[in-house]
Length: 179
Image 1 (cartoon, rainbow, N blue to C red):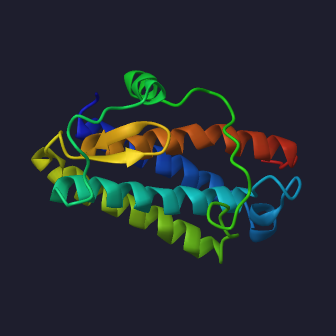
Image 2 (spheres, rainbow, N blue to C red):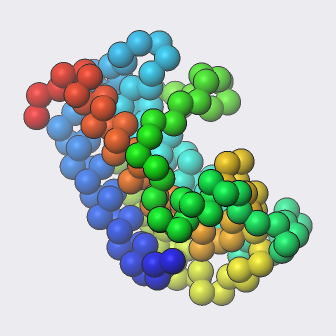
């Protein structure tokens, strides 16, 4: 696994790219959807922000060694092992059925997204500074990847953000946005 400092640097670079993409859009473009099933670009940004805070919370649980951490014998799934070996998600579209629990709301404003991304970066910086204290046997269960420790939850955030560039490119192309 890459060092936590390298992961953080990669994440900061990735967020800079997301912020640069935001500058090219307005609220109308952020909320435009291809159809009722697909997310808007704004919803994708909300998803990235919200999921990062969930993943950071899980990393914190691992660091705290809270009661919710799993038995150290628990392992990653085969899918989890493959993703973490490559340090990236496969370049395939992952489609989850729409549901009130999972489908993100449209963003409140452009400022909400910019502020949210900055808050995630700040939390990632704070997390990186204490990750060396983590006990790798403290793990939380991910629904697809199995048992992950604090450093793996941290890396997952970066991999997740990089993966959503595929969705961003697909939506920009499908919605025919001019640069």
